[in-house]
Image 1: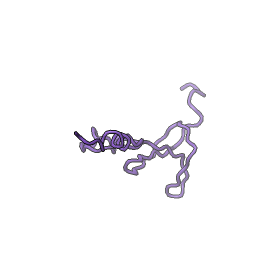
Image 2 (image 1 turned 90 degrees about the vertical axis):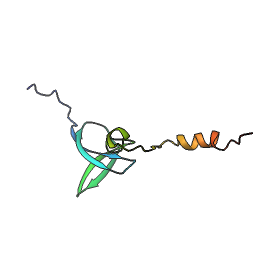
Image 3 (image 1 turned 60 degrees about the vertical axis):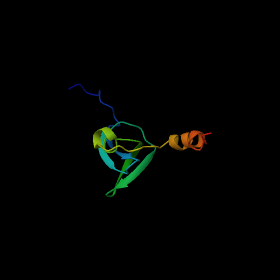
Image 4 (image 1 turned 90 degrees about the horizontal axis):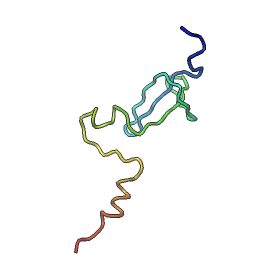
Length: 84
């Protein structure tokens, strides 16, 4: 193998699914400002809105994922309109 071709910051990172609070640890070079401690070890933390553990295609369950307030914005605009 060629030397010095791999990134120097390749390390274990925690990815956290914010919709169901599931976490998994894998190796990555992604940059992160946050950290989390698991079993006495501190890892960089990357927060994700949706992963395979919460996506309807992989889970088989239809679930509304609203992290940006899109449903509330829609309801405030169109949900309270009275029909004449």
